[in-house]
Image (tube, rainbow, N blue to C red; front, side, top):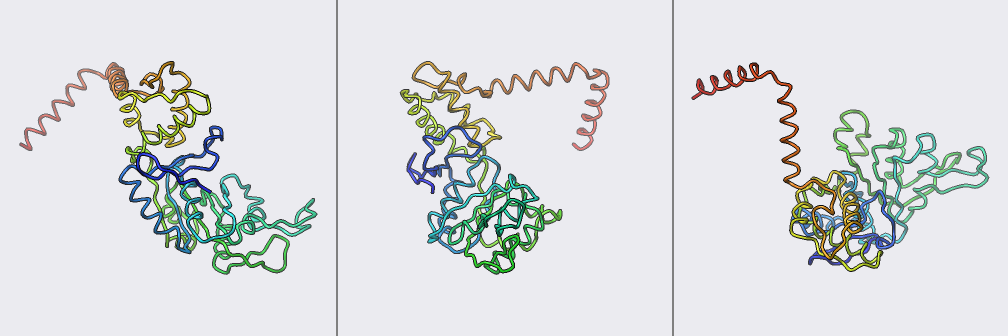
Length: 313
């Protein structure tokens, strides 16, 4: 389950062991300070109690699994929350991994296995990067969801299942459908409940709240006093594009805490380009590019452009 705390006057979603777990590939916190995040939270709370499948779209590292876990926690599902990374499933064994297998179905399988679907019976099945599933498995997944039955590999009879599906994708599934890479009917099945988790660069109001949260976690873990984040460092954090989203922010804050020596985090501790650094870098690149341009040719292009402007005037 996720833990629901309060920070900056707004809820904070985390994993229960977030203060103990090491750096990982998943985002470990999600806040709702930014106006876009607050609207997302309203939609999240509206969908969570309903018995609907949910599709979450968002870039890698934004915290899609945190939303999925909260949906399960806020529902009336009494079973387990089962999280599956579809990209990590071998296409050869995807059928058995998801739907289970009977004893003797494969060489060396002396016992049966329920599979992820069976493990989530009565609960919620979270399929991260659902588009990574082979098309044949997507078709079987849809059939299982519609009939509430799964047939294990090697079994003659189906088993009843009651599973709520929460799926996530970092790609546009509508485009995947158009390209023939995703099952159109499965996409329609997921259409009743859809959430979009914006990237961190579009939720600027969340950045400092998350930074303070990670600063508190790692300060406690390292037995250090929690330093302040200087105004200049705050500006650098808010101006960065965060291509790695929350995961990248966590790494940056952890590094800053390790290299800072006082009671304040400064821009140089963040290992991020400041606005001035970025401008200087652009100027250097432009100067280098102009070194390879024929001045006469450049002057001719500018002259023609000015002549067109005069004609339009």
